[in-house]
Image 1 (cartoon, rainbow, N blue to C red):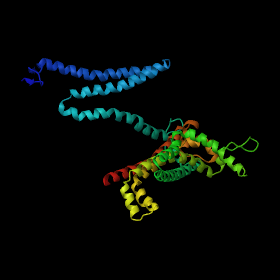
Image 2: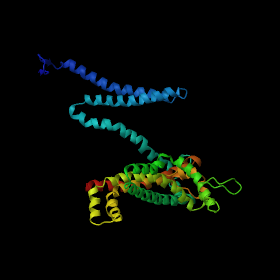
Image 3: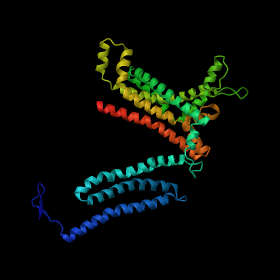
Image 4: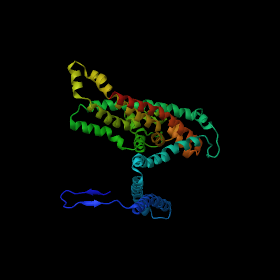
Length: 383
């Protein structure tokens, strides 16, 4: 059987004959070898590369160059080689296999870097300080009976209530007010409020240490901003970070200060998405600005408020930098769960207790994520 093809404008037809039996077999073998050779060669090349990258005597600049070139190029040729292999499959199989070939490496990486650490952490939480022998649930008993741990749980609950409440509330107020400014004034106001987001938690903590700084009498002049104000008003300086339990609120102020700008930007975008016709219709019907805000704006942007609140709750659960940088959390009673986890893992050198705290923190996040996913599904159903 012959197939005939012609090109527009061409004076002659091109006749293509399929290869004979022997040539077809040879072509198939060649395809198989080429398809298999690429992943195999790529595997050994990556293996040799990893050996080179682990060489402590290798030139650091060359190590970085090889890592970038082989990392990017290796991923490209890996997918290209697997795609060639799938092309060799019969047509009825290739299209069904191809999606899994491309998704497979991502699933493997996800399993290695997410699923495996979770399983390994759970196993470590059931072992002793050196992860040598199993101790059952002793580490979890410690988490829920130790006075320091109970204090950290109470403080963390305070963080996940105060920070999202004030962060979202103040951010929503700023977003509503900034929306009423002129275009140029709105940009300047939002930029100033959003500016703290550009600072790391460590940097923000150092800034606020200067704000809360206190020096006992005889140790020099007060350099803290708040104590400078107190002295200017004729009052005695206050050791702000030692005032239990108010010192926890003073640390929460730092995170609220940082996260308010984020909440403002996201909520402002949601407010601008509300159709002007709805707001104008409410005003024509006699609704006050407060009623427009409460009964139109807030219900309309409620899904966005939930997302921002969830983000802040998770950040509050993970807070460590602020408490650690501000210093001496155990003596000042400012311990939180994430700080205790880092302390037991890396300072007190007790892997079992550190892992147990990590598992508790992980379990605490799961209900929040499930609730958030359900809300997203409900919204999609309504749409």
